[in-house]
Image (cartoon, rainbow, N blue to C red; front, side, top):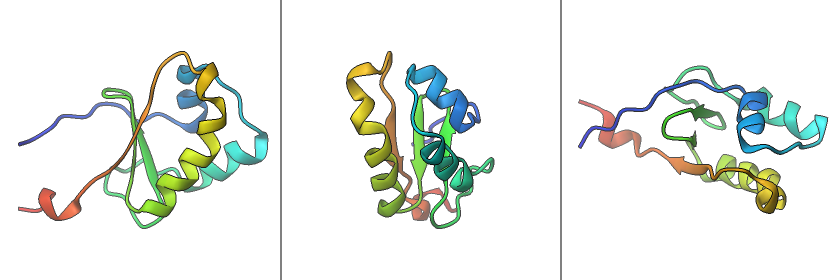
Length: 92
């Protein structure tokens, strides 16, 4: 089954959509590993607008996103998913 994803949000755009603020250091940490490309390298993440999802390549990056975002969950004006793509299933 094929899925269609749209958008390439920066860290600040993602935070604005969530309606939260994080520390400058946390924002820089996330932006430093954010990828404009959807073909992720180890440790990178990419935020899609539709569906609103932060996609990662490994569990360590997922845990970092969760660690930074989870304390602000009650203040978020919308939900975001963190997903890990099975790259083997996307190859032809």
